Length: 636
View 1 (cartoon, rainbow, N blue to C red):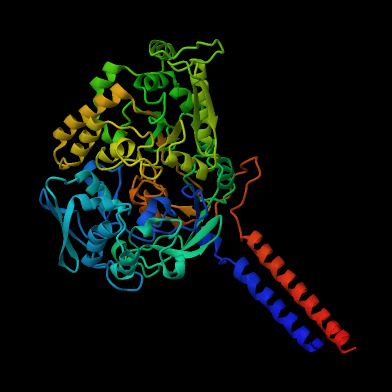
View 2 (tube, one colour; view 1 turned 90 degrees about the horizontal axis):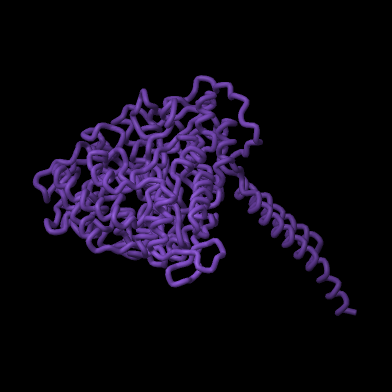
C-alpha cells in the first residue's frame, strides 16, 4: 500500500477519535442559575425510566414525565388533601360502586394531542389486564370497567364483592396516566416483560429516554452514570391552568452515595434541594446556611415509619415472644437524640402516622404498655427459653443452637447505619449476639428480595395515604419484596382478612374504619410482627443561593419531597413556586470538610474510547507498514 493510502487511513481513524470524543464527553452546557440541583431520591445510575415499574425506576418518571389524575397533600386539612391535576375536579361518586372523573380540557401530551378518556381507560383497565405486574395492576381485581362517557370523562365501575377503596384512592394520585397510542403496541406485544427492568430500563424508541412521550413538566435531556438532566417543557399544558411554568428550566438529579458528601455539597451551594438525611442538618438551619420546613425542632415533617423488619420465615424470628423482647430491648430515644439530633419522633407500637391520629386505639396502647425496658426484655427471653447455656455470654435458642442477629442497612445511609449499630448494642446488652452490617444498596435489595437476611430497617411503603390500608397492606399483606412490602414475610390469615376488609370500607364510613383498625392493632400488639421504631422525616433542606419560594410552616402549600412516588405529595407544586434568587446569596463559610461537586462527564468511558481507538490506529499503521516489505521479499 502506498504511503498516501496509509496516511489516508490514519487520517480517517484520527477523525473518528475527534468525532467520538465529543459524543461521549459533552453533556449539555446548562446555565447554573436556571438549574435546580437536587438529590436524595436516586441511589443507582439513572438509566431506568419505566412508568410501569416506577418503584424501581428513576424518581420523577412518575410525576415529572408522566402525571397522575390528582395530587394528595397529607399536611392539608383532610377535606383539602386531594387536589386535581390531570383531573378537572374531585371524583363524583354516583354510587358506592361507580365514580365519574373528568379530565382537564387543557391536558395534552408533548406532541400536542389531548389527554383523553381513552388514555385513562387504557391505563386503568387495559394495562392491568395485560401487564399484570404493573405497579397499579391490582386494580383489575375490583375495577370491572372504565366507561368512556366522552373524550374527557370516564366512569369507573367496581365489583361490589371485591371493591378496594383504600387502593383506589391511593392509585388516583399514584398511577401515571399513559398515552394509549404510544404504549398500546408495547403492551400488546410484550405484556409482563415490560416491568422487567433488566430488559426494559426505558420504554421508548430505541430505548432512548429522550424520546419518551409524556404529559409532564419535564422531559429527559441527558443521562450519565451519576447524574441526569431534565429540561422543562415550555409548552406544558399546565401553564394555561396554573398560570405559570416551573421556575427551574433544568433539573439536575445527582446520585450521591453518602449523606455526608451531600451535606458538604449543600453547605457549599452545590446542591439546592436535598432530601437526603443530612448529618448536622438542624445545626445548619440554626446557623442560616439552609432552610427547612420548620425553623425549629422537629425541623422535618413526619414522612413514614422506619420499621425493623424481622425475617419471620427464619428462626427465632418466627417466635412472637422473641420479637416482643427485641422491641423492649431497643432504646428508640437514644437513636432519635443521637442519630437524628432530636429531629424525629418515636413511632407508636402500631406504626400509625400522625395524619391518622383519629384511628389510633390509645386505650389498647396503654393496656399493653410497650416501652424501652431491657429488664422486661431479659425476663421474656428467659421465660421463652433463650438462655446462655454454654457460658459464652450470649443467649442460645431454646434448643441450644447458637443465636446471632445481623441487622442490615445500605452503606452510606448514615442515620440508618447509626441506628443499626445502636440497636445491635442494645441487643448485646440483653445477651443477644448482634451485629450491624452495611451492604451496598444492590446487595441490600437482593438479601431482602431473597429472604436471606435476619433483620433490616426499611420504610419504603410506609408513607401517609388517604387511609391506613396502604400502610398495613404493604407491611403485612403484600407479596414479599423490596418494592412490594411484607419484608418480614409474616403470615397471619386473620390479619390479612382484616386488612382486606379495611380496603372495602367506603371512605365516608369513618366509624367502621375505626372498628376494623382497632382489631388490626390488637393483633399487632399481640404479635409484634415488625417493630415500628421512629417516624422518618421528609428530609428537606434547601439552599436559597439560587432558588427561593420553598414551602415552610408559614406557607405550607406542599410537602417538599422528590422521593419516588412522592412527587404527588407536593413536589410538583414546589417546582411551580420556586423563583430564581435575584442575585445568588452570599454563601456562609461552611462546611469544614472539602465539598464534593456534582459529577461531570463520564471521563472513564471517554478514556476507554480514546485508548481503544488509539490502539486501532497503531495496529493498522504497523500492519500497513509491514505489508509492503513482505511483498518485496516475495518478489526477490
